[in-house]
Image (cartoon, rainbow, N blue to C red):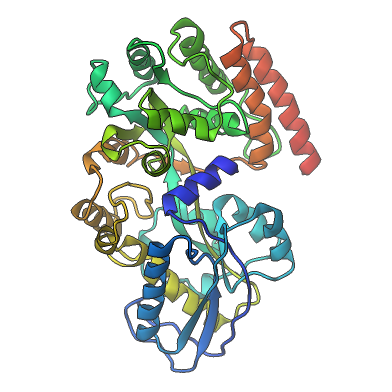
Length: 457
């Protein structure tokens, strides 16, 4: 989905693409750990997608340096990096998959994984999973994205969960404690009223309702309240529920009774980002990478913002990306590819977790944007390094880290884009019509989603 894709690109700091295919080899290139010697000297070549593009020179240089260092450790393995912009083009991704044109090791979004596995377009890498020394420490809810039963078909690279992004500066101006952000929706509502009372142009709480973003945030709020978008079999809508009704009733209260959401509605992704960057928006749903986007692209400052967990949540809408293997890849290529993934993306202190290098290269360090390991040893080490080399105020994100420690990630529903488009109508109606009938809106959306899911099954 578009907002999720944007979030992932911002979190990773990349704008990449998958292109090309190929690679050859005949003997295992796997060692016992990413830092160990190769098991054999016979050459193996793997093509790998999602190299940072030339337009992102710092991260591309880091990738290239990691390739060189990895190949020095494993002289029998050659990595052919493939880049383009962006990593995935939805209009061509499925065609490339079906045509067998993907790299040996290709980049995927979480929401594409189920379909790829079902269509047989990725290799079963279960026999080689022992190559990954970090696999045992991964969050079960994260690695499960790439599993079908007991079989493993890929490896995560990043993941994100949604929380509540807030303007610490406005909290202070409104007499609120920025170190004690809201933990309940009632506290969100009260804080929004105080921020809106600062004067004309101040918005306490912002929400999307157009371009499929309204349905996206409805899902995030619903999950946080313990609800479901679809039934377990994916064949029926499940959001016409007390939890779904609570989402819309809360928004209706803040919009029309409290007048804390401003009069401008039908907002899309960039609208709330721009409002947050201007210093006039108090709170919005978002992952920690929102702060990076606001700082980099919308004239905000890292020190002005904080992130906490979604109020009252035990589940959080999750997204992310990772890698899967071309079904034509040989066992030797799969082993070599797993070694590369662990070296580049899964090991504390190196690759994407080399925060000292990132700091020296002038990249932001300190955002809790990727949590693959939870409270396990690798996760603790990554957090220690992130704090040690931080260039942004880590304490501003501590409420998010602490609050999401026991929150489970939950993926987007099947046919997410189509469902989000339908629920945009309900979100926009509540935010633009004071007399909107919430029961009727949810009932109408339920019927449309049921029909759409029936057609696609």
